[in-house]
Length: 149
Image 1 (cartoon, helix red, strand yellow):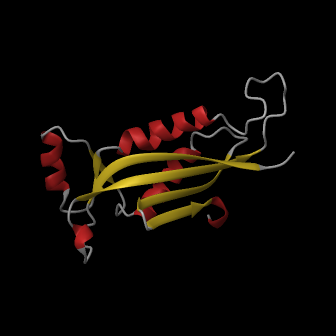
Image 2: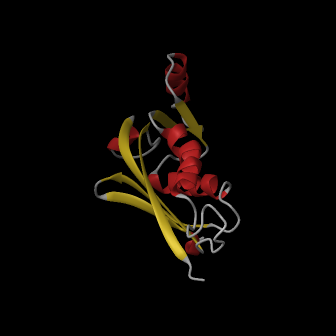
Image 3: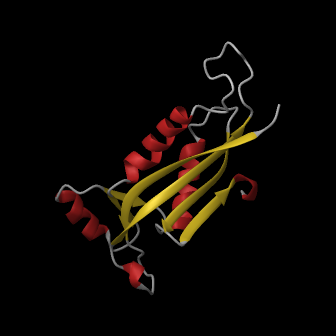
């Protein structure tokens, strides 16, 4: 049977700051992220299976990515837990804001690595994560490919 890649796209709004960076992104700011998730597998050949002909139901893929990424990061502010931004993070949390502290610099590159790990944990065994594309702006994005890792 042929291997097929399918892709589902997601959008979410997230703020962040890059501690120690020498440009404008050291300031707290936000992005309208677009995440493309591509998985690879063989379409289900069992005619008795309700998912017959599908690699994975787009709805099932959506549930995974929504719960692991979109619901967590949408309208959150992400800070590296090892930076002086902790004071600001605590102040925001105390005021009811959704703050995520991560153990990495929250660049698109590091976020896409984190997202790959989170998604991989929840995919069925017969489905493999092929690639992720995290678009930060219309002209800037980071990509993760399983074949590179």
